[in-house]
Image (tube, rainbow, N blue to C red):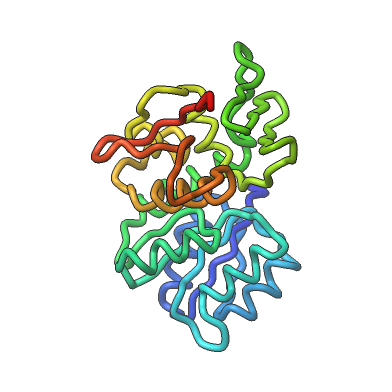
Length: 234
């Protein structure tokens, strides 16, 4: 914990002061940035373990900042925004955010989400499945020991969150996995209602794994319940 570094990015000086004080009280090392351009420079130098990022900022807004950050880094990002519309939330997740929290927010919830995000990163994702080293079908192969996914023999680059979600579905292959179970296994026990996260990441996985993402044959939706991974034989 003493060596865990957090970069806090917001143009509101009161938010910066308040959140940084809360983070420091928990033992985190905190650096501040007041716009996206400053955030990118600081991230490259400070190399934080986590970024907390506002979206509405001068000079460079949070969405552009996130897009540029993902060109060279996979460090976890929690978006902290006053905007609560789902389209913006989905866009932020699409661009590579790991979580999204709306202002005004509970300090306890923010700290819980910080811990959950760091826990996912520091654990290195789900452990290998010792009983079933790999699964294959439908043109894809999942190697649990190497944390690799191949499609047609070529490795498919997945983000940590994408792999963790696929891992959860694959270890329950053929079964419907509920929204709540997926959220809690991939994001942590603090989650349960953020179904837009699942829609966004399932969409990303379909783009990477399905022959026709608009007519999925591997990653199936069970309306109102959850998702299911199947391996078609033809």
